[in-house]
Length: 472
Image 1 (cartoon, rainbow, N blue to C red):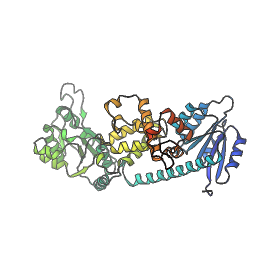
Image 2 (tube, helix red, strand yellow; image 1 turned 45 degrees about the horizontal axis):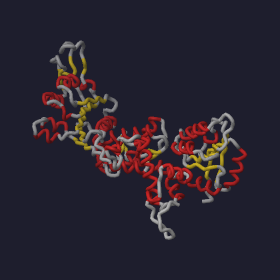
Image 3 (cartoon, rainbow, N blue to C red; image 1 turned 60 degrees about the horizontal axis):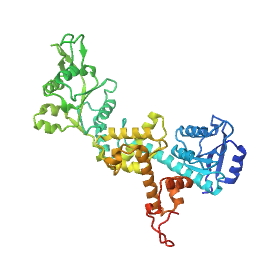
Image 4 (cartoon, rainbow, N blue to C red; image 1 turned 60 degrees about the vertical axis):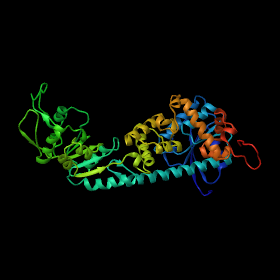
């Protein structure tokens, strides 16, 4: 352990104190100093393992929010290391803001050197582990990608393998799967990886539209074809000539148009509304549906000959609940993407949040998961997505009465349950509980007091020297 060279960026208003602290820490620690009046953070341009931020005694004209602003600047870097803060006194409000803002630990002045060494080493190990995990996730995502799509489960990889074989071949494809499983993304991926990729990709949804509107959208019309047709209009087939036409929800295509679509597939010709002139097109047709077309054929709701024309190759995208082991990995991938979109630094999910996502059925599939994470990133105040940042329906054990509670009430309840559960695992030992939660011991004491946690609440198993439960 002593052979480690932990690089610490120390931001302080007292360079002399930094020199003293550097000598006290001894071998294994390399301090790079910043003064509070230096806004460029030059020492932080190079790699470092921890940030030690001295907020004990800021100079005249510099208030506590300036230190919090500096924390935010550190966290805006590509992958910010853990931040440890030195405080001059026990300010519960400031301490709470710091912890909620993503600070790794807080120590009260004067810092105990042994404790500071331990905190810096523990933060360093955490940063190393997160850096390695980041690399492994990037490699895993790369190995499980198909164009812009990511799938970690075995059944998604089977779909990707089939798609890689199908994409270069100029055949019609039917994509099946529930709403929100990524059918439109698969259609675009097939186009981008096909010989037609330089030509147009045109998409159209057949869902819930009157027959005459669908016909006009697909085949276009001539000027004067109907009341209001003031000029000629090209349809989707013409727009997709040479490229790919994606017809979403093909199961909703009216029966009257199914025969016309069959003719286009057979002869590659059609007429615009109000015209007898035949138009010739060359398109690759990719269709998608969440409905069972075979059952619709049996009921006479879908033409059998059209079904076999469209269903040359069938790609099935499994529902999210069927992707064993893939939800958590996909959630982390989406978290990274949404972070980049919003310019935030929410780095991970709490254990309870992961459990809630893994146990939920996800009827809206990937689209619902993405929206849930997008909401959580917006609401998250620190670097961690907590379970209370997720939609109410994901939270385990929520009742209609509980769901009507305020955000503050829910937050307090979840914090209380988390602290009690961790105390139980640590047999009531507060030092171990603080380490397990990644909190300063002083902050844990205040949490226990504020949340009114008693020994009987934690149900601590008494040790050999005690006959009654107690919090140590």
